[in-house]
Image (cartoon, rainbow, N blue to C red; front, side, top):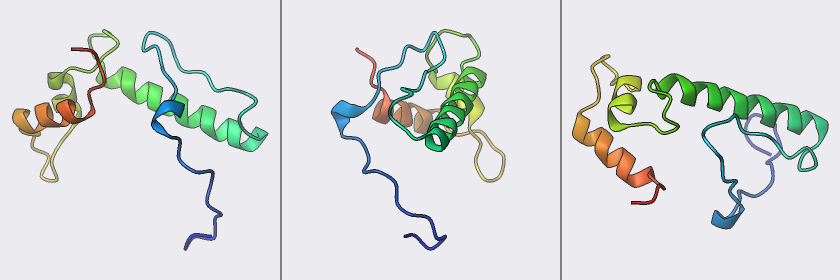
Length: 98
């Protein structure tokens, strides 16, 4: 139980358990993986994230470029992120083949 009174959910997936998404269509949720309430929440969460992804992917290429990500991010003083910082972030999380 956490400080907010909610029970912890299932253990996080291992690297091999992550779903592979095609970024040309919205993700779908396996209907047998969750209870009806969990399925509804997971479906909403995935569609929310898909909507955010589509807003950042302004050229609709199916991937987010460094410049698209820089446009989407702002510092605490509303200034844009340094382009080198954004490039480092992309390098850390980029899973695409090079």
